[in-house]
Structures are given as structure tokens and as C-alpha cells.
Length: 199
Image 1: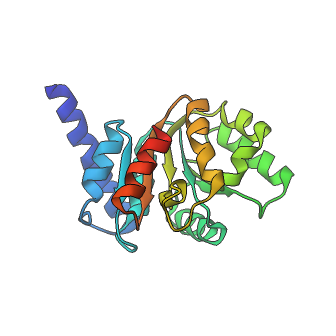
Image 2: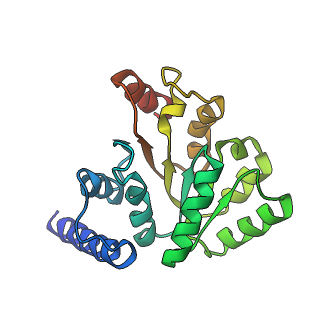
């Protein structure tokens, strides 16, 4: 137990160093450190945090210390590109796979993911309908499965998307990596439904 605590303290210390080095912040915002600690302890986590609260750092920072790749499911293609552009400027190897790129570009990126070229990969939820895409991902070591705009999972949410309901099967197919869900808006019913849908 003592060794585990020291290990966690070392991980958080490293995360704080990365927070400063990559993002220029010396302190976490409210709730960030607690959520990151949960992820590093390999506990599935639901994060409900206001827009501008720094949700993206909760998966971006652990991605830098975890082995393997962090998959980030996002329904917003423009936001994916903005986030990847920002991460690349910081020197964090990242990419996205969505309908804005060709099949050959998708395959090239999948090959690079397999070869450990990227730490963070943004994926549109609709991509998981493609069995060949899933098969390719199954050959990748996924350490964290982050779901942004997680209220889209819930039929009680204001922006329900059927493609999000497939994510439970995807998580199982990928041998159940740590799951992190993030949203700015969720009633108790939506939060409970997110937990239920993803088990």
C-alpha cells in the first residue's frame, strides 16, 4: 500500500511537471487533479465540469505518462482539428480520424498508431461502425478511452446520438481500457444513464 502511494505521488508529481512544461500552468484547476488521480489509479471516471474548466487536460496529461495510446471520442470534427493542431504545437504527438480524411489517409494514420507514433488519437463515434477500423484498433494498446461530450450517450441528454450507444461494445472489444467520460452538462438522470450505458 505504501509503495502504491509513493508511486501515485510520483505520477502526480510528473503530471504537474508536464502541466507546467507543456501548458504553462503551475496549479491544477478545481477537480482536475482528483479526476487525473482516478484515471492513473485505473478507475473508470465520470467528469462533469463547466465549459472552460479544463476538461481536456484530464485526458491529455495522463496520455503522456500512460503506456499505449489514448483514444478520445468526439462528435465535433472542427474541435478535433483545433485540439490536434494545439497539441502538435505543444510537441504532443496527436492525430484524428474522422470523415474529413480519405480512406488511404485513415489507413496510414492507423499504421502510425500501431507503430506507437501517436499518444492521443481523436475519433468520431461513427468510425466505430466500420469493422475493419475496429479490427485495426484491436492491434493497438489502448490505455485510456476518453469520451468527450458524454451526455450524447444518454437518451435523457439534450444531444443524444445513436452512434454513442455502440461505445460500450467498442470498449469491450478493446479489452476494457480505463474509461473516462467528460461533459459540461449533465443532470443526475443523464449522469446515471452514462454510467448504466457503459457499465
